[in-house]
Image (cartoon, rainbow, N blue to C red):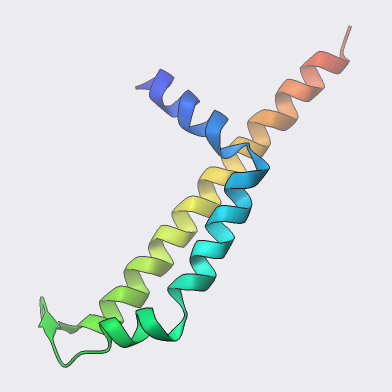
Length: 84
């Protein structure tokens, strides 16, 4: 489990990942995607648009959290390299 987490954190340290997730977040809020989920359908008693926005918001927060973890580990490894 730790090696999987370490691999995920290592991949998130790439600058390209930051850009990709930012662009995906912007695309998620464009008209075509909003129109797809703006249907008079209830899922678990909630409108589909509400679930789309709520789940997207939760995933965004999780990705930001993982980026912050990756940033902290990168800062620590850089500090350890600077010390004699």
